[in-house]
Image 1: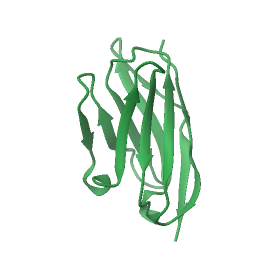
Image 2: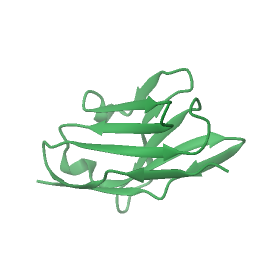
Image 3: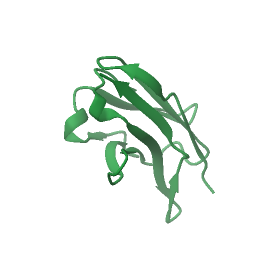
Image 4: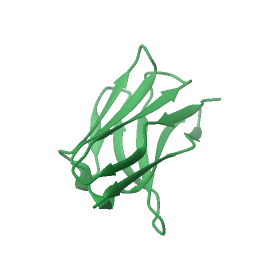
Length: 113
């Protein structure tokens, strides 16, 4: 059983920054992702930190968001800069381990114009 606990969401003005954290109880060397879901939209993949240490980003966040991992703390971060109102969503941490998808409870990010 893997538990994921997100934190760091909040309300920020456009152009501002937030850092999301995902504290994980599973393997610190697995692949972890950040997804987001805005009202009325499907959940979409935002960023991935692979088990090998690589990163991938959805096109709209490239150059603005950075995903990172602190293996000692078993925590994955999403640094979000130059935030836009279109980034408003619930952000979820995700990992696939032991043939099972695990999700956190989500953290709300609201960007005002």
